[in-house]
Amino acid sequence: MIGLLSYACKVVKPGRSFLRRLLDLLHATGSRRGDRCILRLSRSYQADIAWWREFVGPWNGVSFLCPTQELPEVAVTSDASGSWGCGAWFGKEWFLAPWNSRADSLSIAAKELIPIIIACAIWGHAWSTHRVNCRCDNQVVVAALQARVSRDAGVMQLLRSLIFAEVQMGCQLVGSYIDTHANHLADDLSRNRVLSFLSKVPTANPTATPVPHQLLDLLLNPLADWVSLEWRHRFSVQEGLAPSTRCTYGAAVNRFNNCCTHFSIHTPFPVTEPHLCSFAAYLADQGLAPQTIRSYLSAVRNTQISLGFPDPRDHSSLPILKRVQAGIQRVRSLGGPSARLWLLITAKVMERIRAHLEVADIAHKELMWAICCTAFFGFFRLEELLPEAKAKVDPAVSLMWGDVAVDGRDKPTMVRVHLKRSKCDQFGAGANIVLGATCQPLCPVTAILRYIQARGPLPGVFFRKSPSEPVLKPWFVDQLQDVLAAVGLPRHQYAGHSFRIGAAKTAAMAGVEDSTIQTLGRWHSSAYLQYIRLPSERLAGVSVVLAKHSNSR
Image (cartoon, rainbow, N blue to C red; front, side):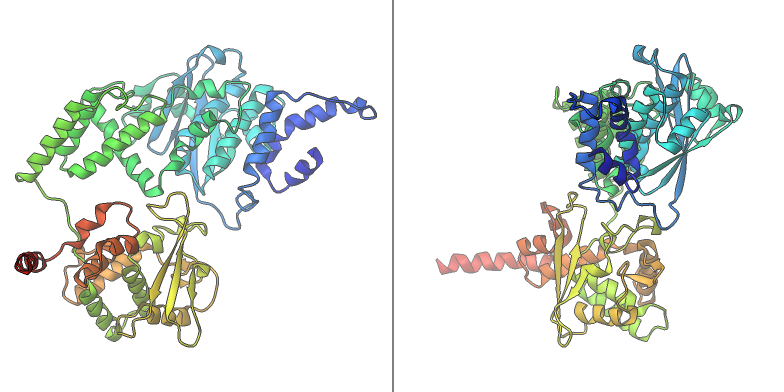
């Protein structure tokens, strides 16, 4: 088994660190190879074997292979002091953490590695598909990061922790040396000199990123079990959220930190009900809608649980917070600014878009119309069809050539679009959306077939301007708004979501049942009802139906 795993390490680079102990055991028993020898594997050996069993199956080699193109790079700088603690900073984010008694026996190299692991645990969800340059002023740590092995037992144990986090977060960690004198910012954090750090980095967040209080104990445990529930929770807690939700929650936590600074709250976590009430009032004062405030409060709750603290609702129903939220809603309804409502792209608006694209002298008109028809007739969220940025193109999520299929060559009647993951499908169950031929000017099958003919049967991202240039959502929305402005519509009142809600409205006007609209739009709640927006004429017609029913009796 050891020989097979050693061979596999040529491709599965992270596996070297989880094979080191087994190789050492093999060498230690080398003098007794001729004899039959039975060894009882300790918990540490079993944990390393469990890592192989757990991760090599799901990750079949693709994510371990070196990328064919250069990954976008981010940098994190860290430092550790022998006495107080450690710290690191990344962009505007920073943290610091004091040592506990279990760290006293560690070498300085092991201590220097700990802040890198903590950084990966709390910021790693933002590093997915990135090359992370870990800048450290300890050459032993830099060498260990490059080689993935170390003769120092403490460093080796922590290195396994770091590689575990690296694999979980889907990033690529590399080490680089920074001179001690140039590392003064991280040095300030490792010695609890917060004011000095903030004065040197005025763009940094005013408060530190919270570090889960059990994380340091977990890292210093010499009997770590890499596949235990505790490890999964500490290094995968953010994976239960969709990327868009993580982005929203990140913005919410930044606002919460600013709120705590505004109200001189020095210990934001664990949160209390007065903290949450202050935060809700702070957001309302900044003009945020009640629905957004609820989302931001959920983000704070999520962070509280992620840090290992109890759910704020476990010990209280938060009655005061509920009253504050009700008050915000009431003030909003009495004259505060209303939430922005995007205008709908209905079938009539689609006709105007089609007519303009047919006569306009613009590039990629087949591409534009195919996206419009796919988004409208498929009730798609635009981000399900188009990535936000080129760096976010992911074959496991993005719409690729192989995800679109036609039922025939001669007279196709439908196009099937396979959606691998969506906002309401975070576990990747997938869905097949069927677009039927209409034999009308508005026909998604005709639009997609014309685009395919212009595109060519080449693999890669389905919607693209060239083989190396995928269509990005911001570009399409900008082009769409130009077309809408050209046909006399207010461009800034339409967005990518206008297709989805416009399709729901058009279906409702055509008499499609609500349950069918919910299925077509893949809504898991009754949220779709707010998009239907039935006209007053149809609502008034209900009175006629009721009157006829009374006469029939």
